[in-house]
Amino acid sequence: MLLLFPEFVLACLFLFLISHRLSWFVIFIFLGRSITMMLLSLFCRMHSLCMSVSASEV
Image 1 (cartoon, helix red, strand yellow):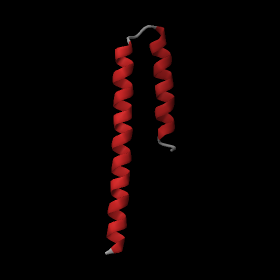
Image 2 (cartoon, one colour):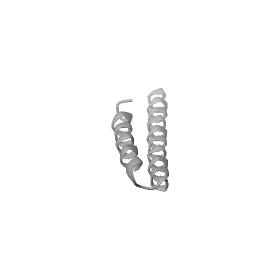
Image 3 (cartoon, one colour):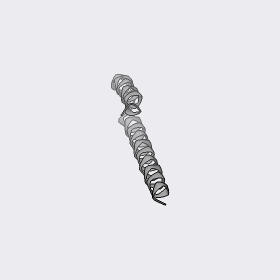
């Protein structure tokens, strides 16, 4: 959960900047990329956890 905190702060700052003048398309790309990275990191973490569990069983 600690890894998500800086991401959340960055997203808030980005949204604050966006609300001033940038386009919503940039927000969409930024949020989509951050969500994709979070899902990838979560998947990698679960995968490494499963691999370590299967390795300890052997």
